Length: 298
Image (cartoon, rainbow, N blue to C red; front, side, top):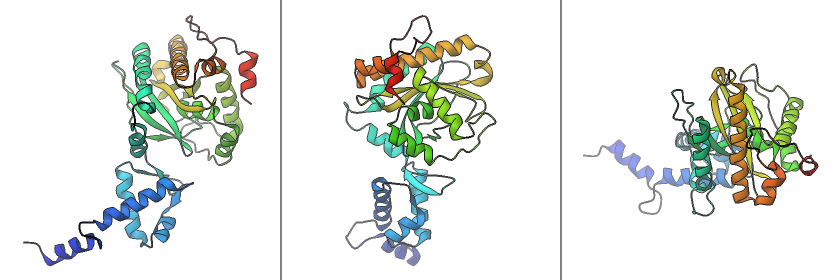
């Protein structure tokens, strides 16, 4: 038997149309707002636009956040599209799925390096991890699909940021807040821009314990036909072990670069791959940067 309280609750859950769940309807309206927004939304913006009380809007946002459909910036307290929703979007359609396209290159990279591999994209002002494969080694760096990472202190983020169109990169840099995660975290824009210059020259980005003090990460951009980064592929290693084997780091960097070049050739074309990466030396050393490549990026 249903109690009167339960009955009233059930009635409240029903909208004007029979069978419509009002809370679900509201949640979908919030999700649509976040997806359509040109910039991150605050709780107050959402509650006001949907004429809801803040407590109800907050509960619905919490539910969406727990399920990965929206993401909350812990510092700014605003909301953007979540990793799970972007992952769903990326897997719709066989020919256009970046995740599906990246998978074989990621598998090969993990096999060659015996390190944990990952693939991500730029989402708003952060790097979003779309795919991950753990290594078969005794010590495995764990990660999760749908995780957001800062651009300025991760290898994946720097690889993506370095190869954005100049105007977009400038906007991202202008709005960037340099939170210190470790003693090695880049502290200001000048240090970051110097690092990005190196990434553009080498086609490889590094994170030497900048975001997580026990990790050493390497990533390279995947470039589309317009010459800008549409993704980045890389690996994560345990820093205390990695720094004791500089030759291994050099080999991993070449393998990462080669994987990015191959995927770029598949998506952006061989001319784009040659412009950004040149040819990858089997001896494990990056080729000299040509004048054409130097002129390609500011």
